[in-house]
Image (cartoon, rainbow, N blue to C red; front, side, top):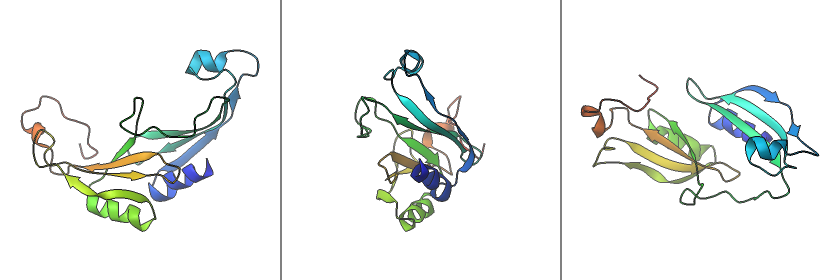
Length: 155
């Protein structure tokens, strides 16, 4: 948990808001009923962080008898990642690299299709969670005639 708080705070720039207590049920099925996890799972801590003017991040520290210790890849069923919008993707990728973060290749610029104008690059948190940076400061091709637009911090 300390590593995750430091990464999201020091590298990503999120603000620590508060840490909640633990949650477990030593005898019943609360954890299974409420979260679809092992009934003896122990949520040791939950931390709330705010990322700029966008999302809040909840970090959970769980222990469970059936806990898996391998993150799914994005291509796996149930795979996931976090994505952060940035104005200057080249500078953001260089910043991450300078902080010792594993960045996968260089930013990719979409040149065709509805996403033309978008740049993206994946990176990895120290514990293995994949994340993405995305940028489309001049918009995407689909926006020219779309009735509804994707959220963007500048709007």
